[in-house]
Length: 243
Image 1 (cartoon, rainbow, N blue to C red):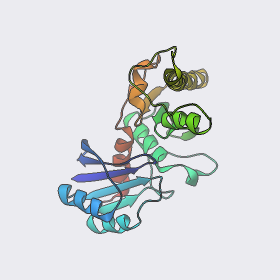
Image 2: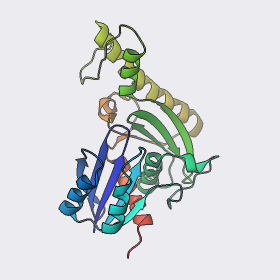
Image 3: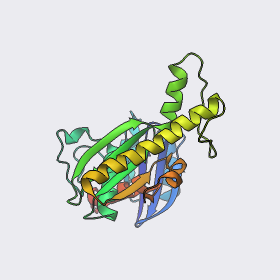
Image 4: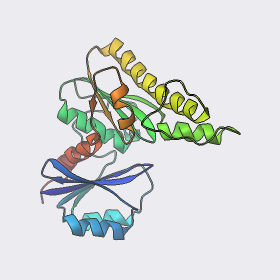
């Protein structure tokens, strides 16, 4: 059984191919046109598909996926493997629903803090009773670099590099140190605050920018770039019933 999982985020459009429960390929999409989708469907012939989208994507692709596969679009009516005892569960982002589905599936009956580093940084806490309690949202790495350039008169546009100094020696490296070390301290601060309240729990670091930070966090973490896709697959299995 082949399943294709789509993750349409603010920065990238991605898809993952699963053969049974194993992810075999990740694909970056050029756009969300029906032509692009038809090419993917022709190449992999999936029986199931699922879409998580936080953007205004091309609505034609939903009809295409419904025709070609057993299709599910994540929404407030999606069946999930956890509960959401919050004020307005319908406002929870589809990406966060997928992350919590993965946490409930892979780390059951444990407290889990899933930190996703993308356009924004989201902190998502699932307790041992499989209740998604919420978390926090802060600006992501690229957003911080861009805002310092766009909201000042003279600061340049900087970007992350693998090797950056703790103490910046020029404007660019000052910006790099401020953003990257700042995010490291933010993540460790969140983990520390949650530890004071909940004691031991799993920490999962994921998202497109997680590679910059995984090796710098002093706490024990699980780094899993594919975590959201794994959650999408789990939700597809729950919501895409056999024909």
